Image: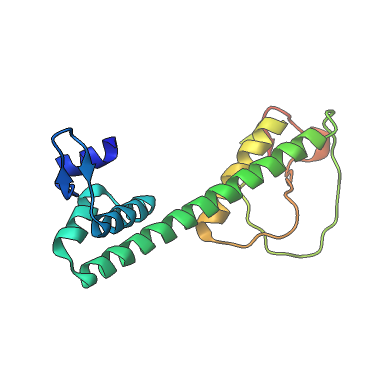
Length: 170
């Protein structure tokens, strides 16, 4: 009831008849308009735009509005997809952090040749620092739209006999 009164106050939809007792009556055509307004609101189309659609009664205007809305939705989907991937990477990093042996250990590995995305700078060698750096690198990879395969790893450039946990070259 309040919604219909608001539509009346902004000249979006006037009742067909208002009785002396204040009851408002709408025609079948207006009921259809109410359903169209509800559907457009579900698409996050503003009441101002809905009023323009109704006032202009121009299918080409509606078509252009829907094309713009489609572009907005595609951008939102892309943004949400990036956010979802970031959350999944954070989950993976936290699970990886939780699975670490809490004593710092060094493991030497030989790996086949591959292309890698990396950052290199000195920082403390601890799980919090690793997660921060992995997230920074992940953000770079997402912005460049690279496809990642394999696991996340850190390469330590310090000689293991001179390793400095407070200022490691990673």
